[in-house]
Image (cartoon, rainbow, N blue to C red):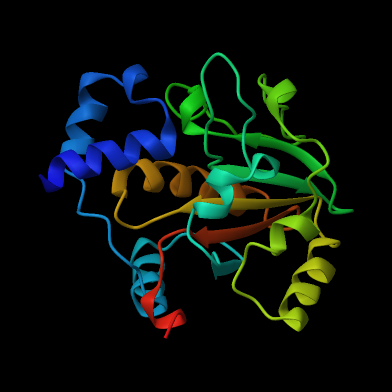
Length: 205
């Protein structure tokens, strides 16, 4: 039953299980049960993996806001609605592009591999009115922290926000590993924010 729940939840998050190969389906079957991830667990996970990044944040309401608001996801199209895996902004905080595992961006090609960062071929399905300021609304940060992020972002060519959870292991780690390498390659041009989208009970008490 837990395995079925994991498959169902991942398919809802990615809307693309039908496009996965046999190896990826096996990886889904090996997923842990979805759970809440505390700041301590997240810190330990990131430290163990030794990812290169600039900021680690929690979303204020897991993926609910991203899933339910058309402002924050791929619009409805022939492939359905897809949750974003990462979103990219320029030094002014203006929206550049987005990528999602649903559209095969991380299956057999690198979504982000060089500067300037390429535009997503599904760009017509993205809300181009998005901005870094609107993105920061989703994070569990106070006003001063949000202002600090905005100020720091101006010093970089790109700000990349990556959404992930620990329990999705391979599917999140594949993206985190790719973006970590990109950050190491362009440390002065990329401001990398890792946003954990698993609900944290400690922040609700």
